[in-house]
Amino acid sequence: MSQEFKNHDMTMMFAIHDALRRELERIARITARVDEDPRHVLSTAVGWELFKKFLTIHHTSEDITVWPVMQQALAGRPAELALLDAMEAEHAVIDPLLADIDAALADRDSGLERLGGLTDTLHTKLSGHLDHEEGEALKLMDITMTKEEWAAFSTEQRTRVGEDARRYLPWLLDDMAAAKLTGFLANMPEPLRTAYETEWRAAYEELDIWGARTGSTAR
Ligand SMILES: [Fe+2]
Image 1: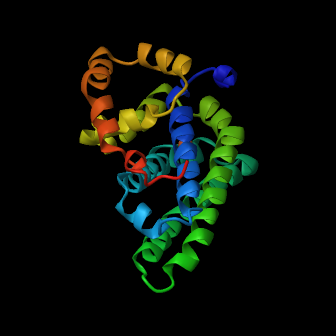
Image 2: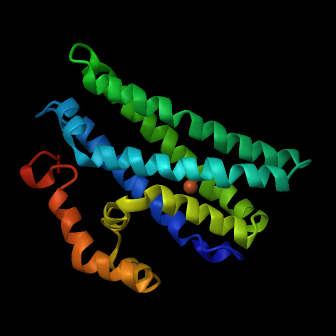
């Protein structure tokens, strides 16, 4: 998928997007449950907190370090600017949706009725956005952003993850196909790879982010 990119390494971008898609599927399975109140499952799962946190970090980093520098570089090119506007607009609907879902989770009366529709909308909007970004915006990022700008985006994201790297890395790699995982780890700085392999991965599995091991996640 990344062969079309000439300048920047998109491995991390695709990994984040795939992790978000994976979690959207898990959230959809939980909200489709009838044997237990999905409000309880979702509001008590570490998985929901991690999903919100890492999604927000990713989008905020793009909002700060990607779209504005591209807008400057592409001034006077209406089609490209329209695509950037679309990226920002697609991001802007996600935060209110997360807030609405949290409100539904906390609403004992009518929250359950609203939850399914809201998580369906989140699924549609976020999947649509990720596809749109991969289909059109990444190519434009690749040819527009300088090496320094691309590095600034990576740094922004890494700084925002900060101490949560110990959760973020295994979350990112959760469920990644074995061959891909091997390649991914091979390109990772040695201290990070060692931390992941000797400590972080096991701690993450212990977290059981959707409560699957206690029977709280639908199969
Ligand atoms: Fe992205």
